[in-house]
Length: 253
Image 1 (cartoon, rainbow, N blue to C red):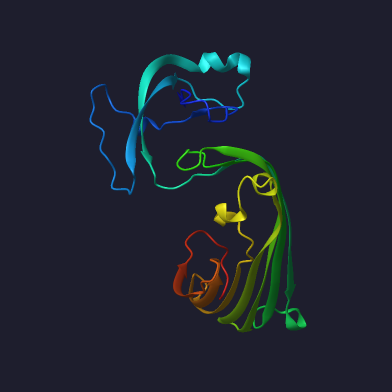
Image 2 (spheres, helix red, strand yellow):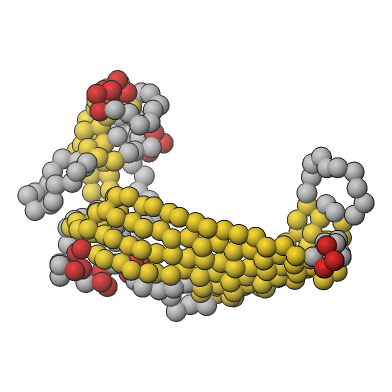
């Protein structure tokens, strides 16, 4: 765990200005730093204070925090600057979901023909703080409130028209909902500075047919038109072979 020294006086003070480092990224004293092949304007070295964590734990109370630290060390962190801005969110995220399944078979016999309708609706509310340019790669870190209300749903149907054959259709949709960005409302930044938060409602349509040559296997052909990315329609074709292994009750297929 590393803590940043303050550089200059124009940087806002963060509530917790520390971050974790994987043990795999730490070199022995005198080790050589290998520069990765990334587009950066500069590889910047920073003198920092490192805390060595010696025990596993979670939900640690502040009074017990020092019991998990086995030492301190001087640390030099190397960062790639100019690779782009990094934004971060801290706060509360609440998710609600409702799902349901409807099954129907003519004459109550699902062996020859059956139909299944399945769907789910979810809603997510987020309240917290959004940090713009958390890496201080351009205009410097700025923070403001973020409030979002988003939802999504899917509905799919599968019809078995013969004992070994099925067809199906599925529709997925995400709704951008309502979003309040404090840094935009105050005029400090523009909505274009947060392209990942742009209002867009992704959708996907999927068709499939499958054949079950035995009770243990299934071959599926599936086509999807995915509009997850704004302005781009992605056409996808899948061919799947599914096989099940394991204990099962003795019965005829």
